[in-house]
Length: 501
View 1 (cartoon, rainbow, N blue to C red):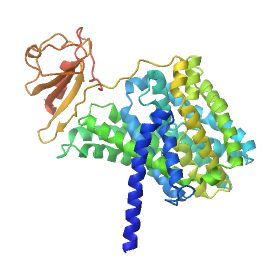
View 2: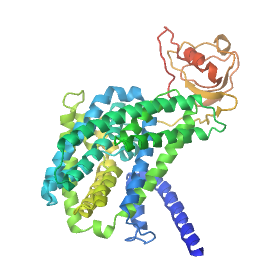
View 3: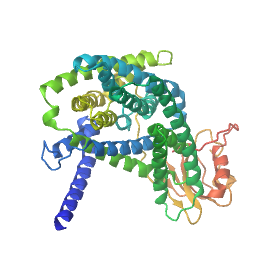
View 4: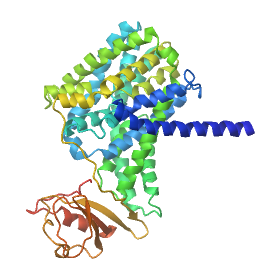
């Protein structure tokens, strides 16, 4: 009994230390110019049996479980942060990259894998499918805080958020083709449309249901709202996956719906999921690092084959997929080159590489090690040079600055009221008016104004200026009326949504 408790305490201690080290590595990653995911993986490899020997881990089933759970959380957080107004103009090319692009990448890599790895054609296509998609965790992390042009960032984020289902479908399909005596190709085609179509529908329905539930329910603690939202993400994935549709697609679509709805407790939900997504990303990459044995990975055979396939993926397969998929889209040559270079591989290929291992395929250990090496080279070479590449191609925008002020937004559940943030647009009708001149509802109170980084205490004669940030206490019943007043333009130009932040 005492030994059992000691072992449990030992693993809790190790878990705490790994999380602390993982968080600290994010600080060093920006200074070193190395993506954080690479450092997380290295932490796992060092802690594993071929490193310090702190943890012996060779359970692909558990790694797959943690990987998929982490992807659900990461996709949910990424979808919440994605503005539909930004994604809508690039939705078509992003979806083409997420479907046709993955197919083309799979085919090109498959041909290379057939000869480089010396496997059958079906196994070559299986390898191509595993590395065919870009990774949401890697792309979101690489672009966060960078001044990449909005069009490019939105395309990459939308693609990475929606191409995982395609890669997973192809991976499972080729595994079944390898194992089946008489494969039914018609069944695979119908299964594809079922997975994508039903995944999209369930994502839309449950995303709308979650938004309504969050806004209607009145919980005693504001801390329960982020948990409530996260529960809908897990519900969306599980319900969709249980009927054999694409749970990952459903989660991302639901998150888009929720994130673009005027939510109560919006900031609490966003901040909680951002922190939780980071924790799951650290956990996922550390566990994937534990799963690999460096002694088997860094051999001359794996390094040579991995470098050859990485080069083909980065310099041939991805560019061919991008240029064909965006052939009739409004992208310049420079933009296509950037999209080609920024197609990062990350956790998804490694997680998908566990499927052949669990299925017991003959070449699954070879696939896992080569895929792992491909991901490392992609993250190191592409991930660390994305900002430089964007700058060389003149695809950077204004430097993103973090506001000097900060104010924790709260909602007062029992009072059925909340504090909302509103940044005044230069075309807003309230610009130039004093607070006493604006006909706010009776239960609306301007608590504070941030102007040029300074806090201003408002009173009746205070005039509203462009770019002021208002913090307003409002009851939920008056929120629509407040919204109408704030969004009114000088020339009565309608605008039905509050700015996101």
